[in-house]
Image (cartoon, rainbow, N blue to C red; front, side):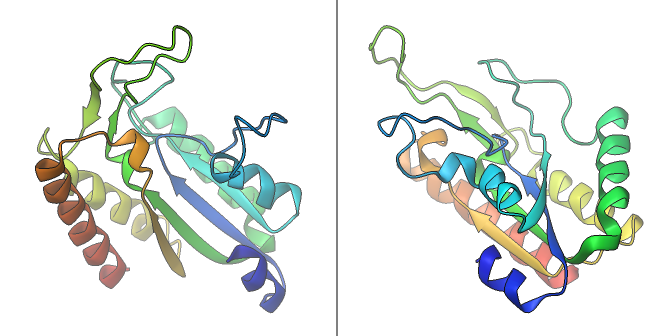
Length: 186
C-alpha cells in the first residue's frame, strides 16, 4: 500500500503508528519471522518509502500496564520534533491504528517453558472507560498541531487481544465506531 502510493507522490509518507508494538521486530529466523507483519516499519524505512514513528501505548514489554503513553510531555516533544524535522520531505500523513493499542492481553504462551497459561489483561481502555478519551486525544493532537491526515489504516493483531468472544465483539465494535468518528472528523 505504501509502496504504490509513494510512486504517485513526489515525496514521502509519514506514518503515525498507534500500536502496542513498534513494528520494528526483526529476525533472520524464518520460523520466528515468517510473515514480516511485526517489521513493516523497518521495511518501509529501509526501502525509503516512509517515515514511521511509534505512538506508544500503555505497554512496555512486560505484563504490567505503564502509567503513561504517547501523551506524556517527553514523548510529545520528541514526536513533534521528529515530525517537524522530516516535514519538508512529507507529502502525506497517515495514521496506522492497531486495535491492540487500545487493549492488550498476554498471549497465553510462555515461550521459555513452552507452557500455556490463561491470557492476562495488561490494559483495556474500553473496560477502563477511557477508550473515547484516547480517541479524542488523538484527534486533538492532529488538530492542535495542524497536521492534516490523508489516510487512516486500521489493523487487528488478534493474538494480542485474547478476549472471550462475546466481549471481543463489543470491544471491536467500540473501536470501529471510534475509528469511524475519527475519520469523519479529520
